[in-house]
Amino acid sequence: MDADHDLGARREPEAVDDLLGSTAFRPVRAGNSFEETVERILQVIKLGLLGHGDRLPSERDLAGRLNVSRDTLREALHSLQRAGYVESRRGRYGGTFVTYREPAPQPGALRRAVEGIGSGGLEDALTYRLVLETGAAEAAARLTLSEAQRAGLRRHLAALEAVPPDRYRQADTRFHLAIAELTGSPSLVASLAEARMRLNDLLNAIPVLERNIDHSAVQHRAMAEAILTGDVEAARRATQEHLEGTAALLRGFLG
Image (cartoon, rainbow, N blue to C red; front, top):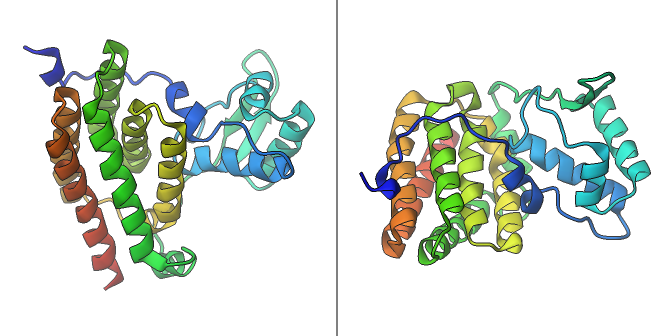
């Protein structure tokens, strides 16, 4: 069987370090280093790139990735610990660990999330995401991918298909960001992560539906298949169909 079509292999997902760099743990800008450090770490946590119980990179590594002093990083981590997002542990197996858990959907949470989505509202956020993600899929399909890149995409797909419902959205985010990573454009990855953050609270405010997971699985597989075989039009079409389904679900819950 052709390796590009062997998308069903179930393998344990590797660390998400390949996503953490250009997605969120990228250098912050001078002037607001504390605030942007908090923002970067929160983005990683809320997008599910690091989940409950996962350990953040070491202080030295993380400060280097963010291009901030270790004092600034420690101040940011202390603030996040006080807010309940992380905790520090000492000892041989110590470090800073994620304690945040994604909240269960609550009545009224979706409308509150829509109100907080910012300028342009829901339709603006959905259009922004659609343009970015279809463009990323097309760009990835045009490239000659390395074996490591191909294996990475298959790995993210397998992880998404195997994950339990309570971790589905985190794995879904990782899969979509992995496609953007294939383009080699840090700006695109960062923009796509920002687009997903705008919709993150909305998606967390609706239940994970088994039928929707099954339907999305077919679409995710079609997206990966098209990218791995270099079918640009199919990659765009499958991505658009998938995102339009998510948009319809959100509109449906909003009534």
